[in-house]
Image 1 (cartoon, rainbow, N blue to C red):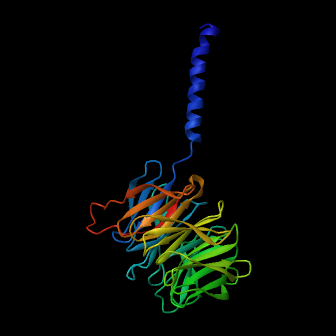
Image 2 (image 1 turned 45 degrees about the vertical axis):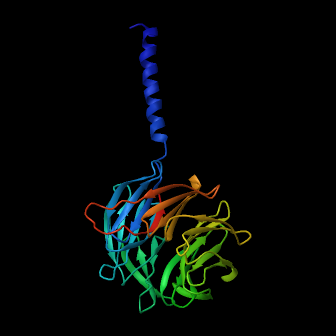
Image 3 (image 1 turned 30 degrees about the vertical axis):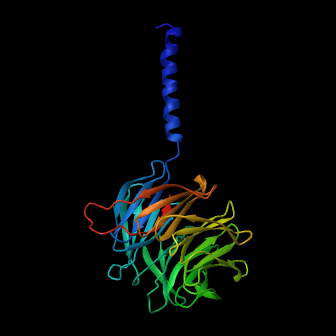
Length: 330
């Protein structure tokens, strides 16, 4: 074969290599994982198709959910007192890798990826403790005594913040000494807690008083109290744009807070009884979990408009409503 006749096959080979390389270079589509307390599953939402592409079976009454972005592992809190466990799921295989038994009626989990630890809240625990999980061994590594009705938790640096729904406080815990270093008075029935490590602020949704408490994490003092809509439940933070998104279960809305001025700048109508929320900063989207109508409202955060709604279907072997609860993006 003459040299010039070799050019076409060589070009075709080069084009094939470039195409393959480009295919591998494309980022994987983001997924939103949604816990369904009504049928003991996690729905996997493909954010490109805006549809559920998979359903994972976990423990009984899955509520809280968190993902370790460094290891690609998801931790699902199974809250039923008879179960009281954490399902550890590998997101590459979408399979349960381990099940960790914890104290009765766990609710939420916060992950400290650098320390390879996680903290699990127990709102109905009479001992008033939270559990420490060793993420290397997948075992309980200790407990810390906090306030009454520990509901949610968030981490900034070496400090853990726990909302105590039963006594209107937030416990500040040193993760080094594993002791409470401060107790901050907030408002009635604090539930969802969101930590902003970038701006070193903590936001607490006070379900009983329709407010959000802002805590200065440098001084561990309340810096503002913001009125929102009825029965706030959870909070999602977009630190890049200085925005907080609060789900209001009692009014079917999301309050948008400017975290610089501590003022509500917008109110977005979503589905019925919104509780969970997951923020995808890279795509400027917020995914709101509507508990009562088993759906997800998708908010484009640059315009604060709902751009889509995804209905969460039931699994074939479950006669119960999905009743979605929490969400996480990976």
